[in-house]
Length: 106
Image 1 (spheres, rainbow, N blue to C red):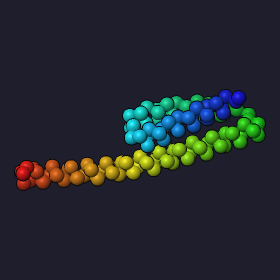
Image 2: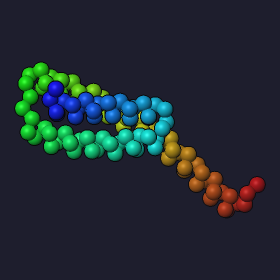
Image 3: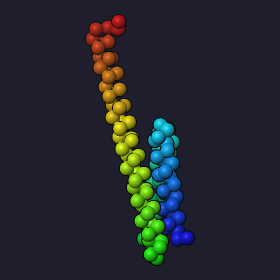
Image 4: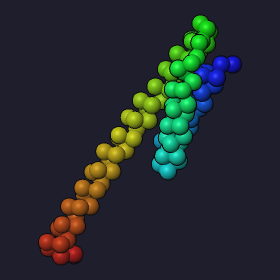
């Protein structure tokens, strides 16, 4: 199999694991996997520059890229939603602290 396709398959596996980490709320694992993804993307850039893919390999590459992008969109949507919820919680806590400072704890 082509080295570039191997890299894309590894990246697709990582984005799938990232998606699972998001679904399970494993944020530390997500961060670790994201760092691994960054390294894989760098490897793909190097390998992709010199790759000469046949039609079958090119189709495999396209399918893998689509899956990676689908996972990325899911992860991004999920993390943005989680971050919005956390923002509300933090604002509520800040507001409670201000009230306690102003009026004293009950």
